[in-house]
Length: 316
Image (cartoon, rainbow, N blue to C red):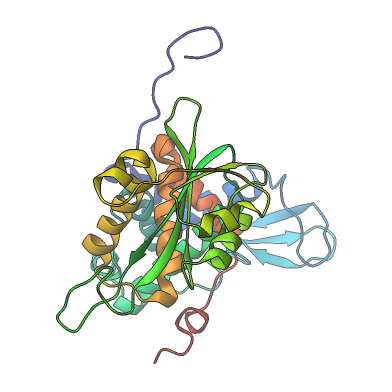
């Protein structure tokens, strides 16, 4: 309903055909980036060299030239797309499927869809996930917040996964609860250890001071609450009782594990945070699904690109 009580039609998700019609060429993608980043008439342009706010578009070269110092800036400079070699329409498609598919998309599948190598597809997705993480870190949960932890990944010698496997990683999970009991925003991050120190660090980063933490009876959370939170512990035991008393946090944990196992199969601990950021990004915008592509594009323009070397670290 709008302010006058009239029904407002729900925004519609862009179809695949509409995507290709809008962004099927390099020129169309560059033009869209220019408008989103700097506005139709470059009214949001700021020269990165001198700070001047006026410039003109050099269409054939796809550059903005500063009206003062004459410095020339590409529309992709200082963004996730900085110095990329693949055509922009492939990056746009990666954003489309990453934003719209609740299960995510694997690097092998993306590589097949847009005709790039596995390594290029992997790099594209992780650069976008890094932009998602930067966006997510801007928000803090507040009010009544369910907090719990889980383990993901790992594989034992017999091929089993989960709590009984080696190499598993702890994940701290928090869900903001609205006055009607429905979930609001969520926050997820890997933790080196599931203990009071690491959980406190997570809470201080992702949950606003003064919020009320709804936790199970584990003593570590009493220490977390001392960092400036109210505390509402509830002894749950395990299994069905825990799910009944903390339904939303367990729902999101279940969905997370389904995404990781179903789409990505095995996730290395060093890369887990970006997969969590992807899940968190979509979950926090689940009621604004039609605008996810546009929002992710803005996030990509607002984030600096990470390199392959930075992503893989010591991996060969």
